[in-house]
Image (cartoon, rainbow over all chains, first blue to last red; front, side, top):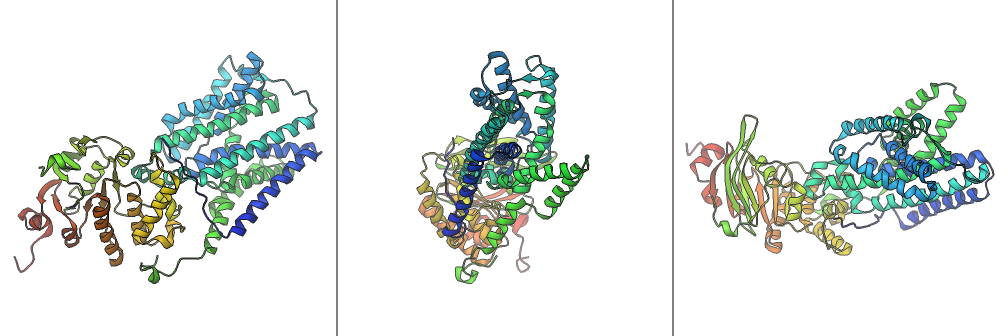
Length: 339
Length: 249
């Protein structure tokens, strides 16, 4: 059904590209070293959360960033994943580390079931429906017997010291972040990524030139939901207790969208930049500004970014790179009128 | 109204379309032969673009049938028709503006089977050279001029080696050099690749010069169909579209 070509684009000089990869690899090596030797529980725990959000935001980025379908309900599939591992432990005593892939499959099936009707909607209608679906699934989790309603499900704490638990999840989420980032990089540099951009820019034209737009959206949405489900399944083990309000919290969906928008939706680097910024700023505001005023300040920062830095940090970098690119010879030389 | 129905590449058979009370197209029939150019003319609002939209599956007709190489394609979605060999350009070029020129050419290849990456890349580069955009291969499409975007859109239609290309006002508002490039490319594509073209245009002299057959629509119906020189002399075409010069009057 798909004939996917991976063609990395040449941006700037080879030296600059190697230098950029060198920086990313050094950062990764530094993070791995901190994971091995770091002793501060708070830092390990915060960074594990950052990595978890990097994975979620990269997953969102596939359809939301490249495809332009703003999903405000990613937490639905994260929650379905969490409940899948929670229920499998509750009734069959299976470890979430074993059942996390099943959590991804359950979330992907739910994503297909929800996506088949909703991905025919566009723009604000799609965004609105994804939010409504979250609340509907949350109510379902509150009412069903199998999910134990508001009581929630307890999972056994791992038989490790707190710092060892955080160190474990630090590496689990770091590994997933690397894998999912590699996947998103490949999508960005392949014709499936360009087809998604075509859908974002002009869906009707994309369909007319031959992109089976509906099937592409379903498939990509299923992948997004699978990743969110796996993360949710592992998250259940990390916090060892899941209940509908916290597991399906709208804040999680909102954070993911903010991270993508601030870092740069539609760029593989966007979530790597956006996730730490949002979490660190949010934490800083929580400590420095008491009460709910910190949410107001945070919202204002986001509005200012949306107004003055559209495309987020990577949007600025991309425009700067493009401005530095040498232009082809003058129109007269090419025999064509100038742009 | 079929000239050589059995050999036709595209058959438009009794097509009708209404938008609420307004009749946009009524009982339109004609055929497009393989390796040929069919010019479609008519005044504004005569149903030309509606007809293109029906042929490439954007709109479903209320009556009639479209056949491609004898197989009925009525009601099939645009991406299915693209896979069958129907490509399309628009009145205003619709390129994917944040993608590079080369990336634009890769978008239609997503569902092409048995296409190897190097072959696809080679095809893309050949097409850029063909339309004169090879220097712009790595530029973002939004940085191209309107005329260059039109050339890019044209190259994009050819990347899948279509059987027929539908072109809506390809010469409107473009630089004469771009127009000359487009005409050359259309002629060479017919000759070298055996594709057919259905071209909607108000540039009647150009269309007369390049078309094998012409159709004129007036008020949604076929006013004339046949050889270009004959069509432009038809009374209905002169009265309904071209008008008479003062001397003749």
